[in-house]
Image (cartoon, one colour):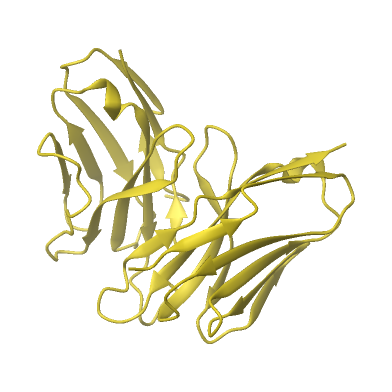
Amino acid sequence: GAGVSQSPSNKVTEKGKDVELRCDPISGHTALYWYRQRLGQGLEFLIYFQGNSAPDKSGLPSDRFSAERTGESVSTLTIQRTQQEDSAVYLCASSLRTGANTGELFFGEGSRLTVL
Amino acid sequence: KQEVTQIPAALSVPEGENLVLNCSFTDSAIYNLQWFRQDPGKGLTSLLLIQSSQREQTSGRLNASLDKSSGRSTLYIAASQPGDSATYLCAVRRSGGSNYKLTFGKGTLLTVNP
């Protein structure tokens, strides 16, 4: 696609429910990132995918969070048993692999999650 | 551990002023530095990217400079307009084996008053 696409743009859920957020990166971008941005805070790294390599999951805050990516395409971020502190904007970004490329990062519009 | 600091945290200027936003980083082993803007409730929009071997990049009224040895970058905005009001973030990508890692500053909230 022309840009990074995220869905849903807004999600309101009840505490304890599971949610799934989707990211469709720019076509041909092998690198994909998930970040979390709480209200008034900076970006918090969650997870990184690069092609078929093992992802860097070091930023996932708890085992309630998981993410998958099929090859170099769509990624889903799943939050199980949501808590109120999970309320945030979840941002996805993609880039070409660094080295021969600039590594410029492109972001989607984010998925705003509100846990009641 | 890389730390990125942006000063000031907030800035308010009248329309038409030229202004400078600052970004400093503690580890000079970087691959590149990227400036973004973020409008309220939106994602980040890439403005300029400077590779570690470059000194500056320009796009329209924006000019970003990089002094890697001193760990500093500046974003210069000429003839500011109310539409420039947003939060501006800088991010550095580390060099070396884990060059996918980026560190973001907390941003500068810019308000341009008509």
